[in-house]
Amino acid sequence: MPGEYRYQLLLVQAGERKEFNGRLQFVLNLQQDGRKVTLILPEAGKADTAKEFKVNFRLFHRVEGLFRIAPNATVKGLQVRVFEGSSDTPKVTHNVTIS
Image (cartoon, rainbow, N blue to C red; front, side, top):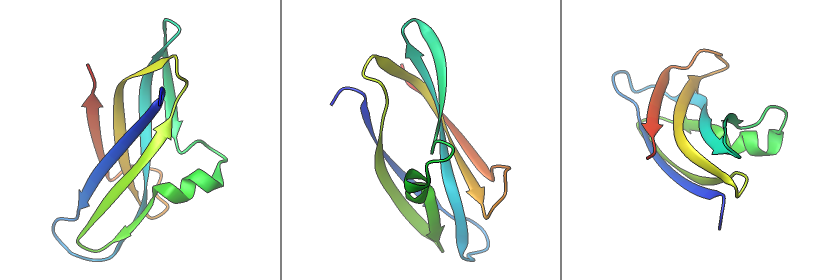
């Protein structure tokens, strides 16, 4: 469907193999109507989608899902952020450029 994007991630914990409890965040860089737009997922105040972005695992964890944007927008790049616990500072970030 136009504006629908599917993602797959494999999170692997290196070093100490303790239980990891945290959350994911996607920062999307979009081109929409000739403008650059930034969208952060999950959106603030949307508790129903925030549950999708929680992660709990010991060794590794596969994350799959999809997100929707306006059909007239194009994803130019994104950043995946992994936060541990309730921290506001990401433990890991990964940038992806889409051409």
